[in-house]
Length: 102
Image 1 (cartoon, one colour):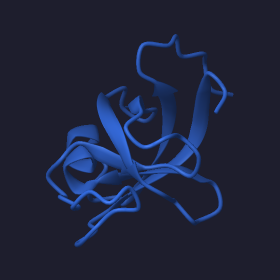
Image 2 (spheres, rainbow, N blue to C red; image 1 turned 180 degrees about the vertical axis):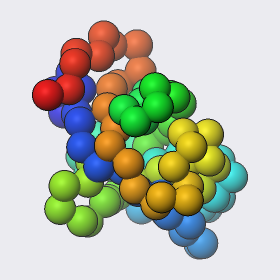
Image 3 (cartoon, rainbow, N blue to C red; image 1 turned 135 degrees about the horizontal axis):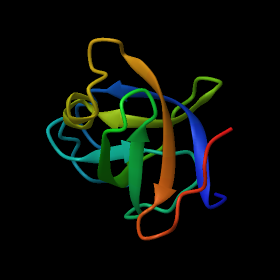
Image 4 (spheres, one colour; image 1 turned 45 degrees about the vertical axis):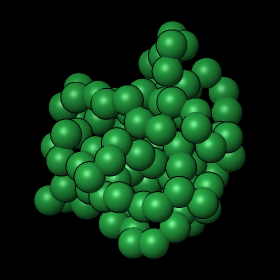
């Protein structure tokens, strides 16, 4: 992943095991990303309202074109897009400077 990725985010509520083997918990601050290693901490900023959270990558996805990350139900609540279902975000590996999204 480049310094930052911008695109769509959705939320999901997985039951059972994630791709990393961890038990899924929709109330944990976790996310799914296609390429980042499991355990990577990322900052996800909702570009519509400026809210941001730090999440841990525990699963693979999203598998919908134009989306860059799937977040847990709790993360979607914190980012204030749970009712909309999707939003535009900037994803940055935690601790790195986030460039602007185009």
